[in-house]
Length: 214
Image 1 (cartoon, rainbow, N blue to C red):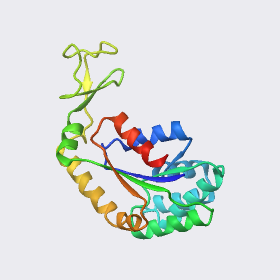
Image 2: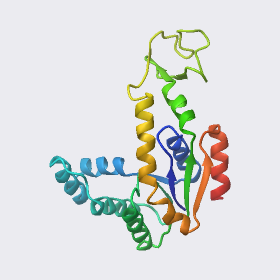
Image 3: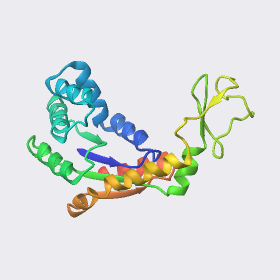
């Protein structure tokens, strides 16, 4: 089973991908992680990517395609994949189809976690964590039981990510829409796209994904 899981930052895509890894033995293929690992390992593709990045240039589609091909070749024939961050263009979507076909694979599902932008802004901008143990909280949905004191470790210092602000969130949403707009029609024409309410509770989203893929 090979899946593309789509969703803007903050939609819970990472959580759902990890649950699929745990429950179905799928491998999450993140282009960023694959690039870093290949460069660190000094593989032929990694060395090629490193030279491009050291020159301050963007890694080409050909290099990314080669990375994905290497990862798929290293996987067992019965293991499926979750594609994260790829494809982002129509050309990449066509390339992925070719990469999979060459290995006797195909895409089974493209699942998008739909979000309400205003609600997502509230979800993300309200996040904060304990500076000591990392427990997460939210201004509206999950405040400490005792104001100013972490429920888990009793710490009194909290922090927020500097990019958890409204302008950044809305910019990310615009970027996400621009990146997914070219590829969704391709997969919709193949009849493999499903939409899920990404604002629902995490367990509800997981159940909806399971209903699609099983």
